[in-house]
Image 1 (cartoon, one colour):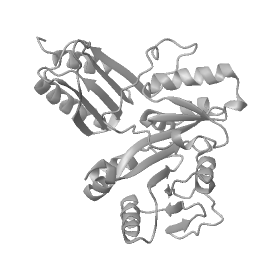
Image 2 (image 1 turned 90 degrees about the vertical axis):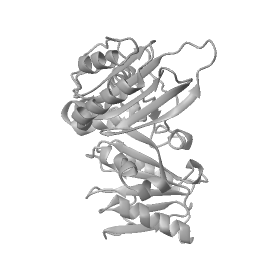
Image 3 (image 1 turned 30 degrees about the vertical axis):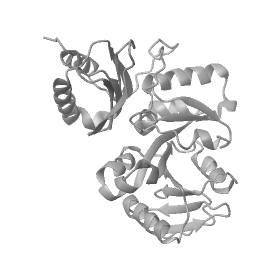
Image 4 (image 1 turned 60 degrees about the vertical axis):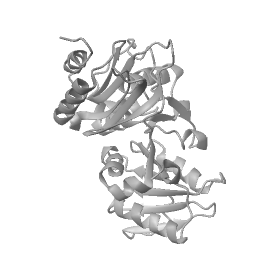
Length: 328
């Protein structure tokens, strides 16, 4: 199915109290012209407009601005299928979906839903994972909870809330720490949920042909080192890869370290291929596609970023070096 016909989905995550509900309440009430189905994948937390939502296992409430709010305490695949059926029959109208995960959740299993279920994968397009980080409490949260670190690691974009409650120096220190954990996610500040819709929707963070943007100085030392469980590293080379060797190596590494690999993505120069090759993965699920052609005279290089929990960086780099053309 063409992507144009698919329903884009945004996964919104963030630790308890970070501001997810504030943002979602605004989306559900604001006259922004989008018809959005918001799915609360929550388990006992106080959710969006809890006073108007029933406490049954599943409830769908249509808002005045055309948005829909669903509370799910069961199977996400089932509610996505149900929403698609209601949309096709004309019973509900919506153009896109936002899924809010519970504050203590690792967003990985939610993201994997779009790769493991064929029906969901054919009808829904995973647009991006957004993570809200509470600037006031993030240091303690990231120090104490590995779930908070995973949420940062999975993000395609970071929305930093409550920056007005801390100093500029504290915001910079936190930003530096986040960039070390996840160099591929831009950081945007959000105040009381007032994030422009354009910074929440149609980011295409999961689009394989999206540009791989990295902070060039994200590895420079910050004032204070943190030994975070979630770390990242970047592999760059100006030599072409041997496709067969690279596929075999990455396949083997993913089999061993897949559970600890949160996100990985790359733009690759492959021997004999006039086009870039782009790839990315979540845990043990990896996909690839052909990118745009290399322009005449353009400098060719490969850039790969790996984000995960205590990954053996030296082992990855040594193995990737062995996959280059001419390596012995």
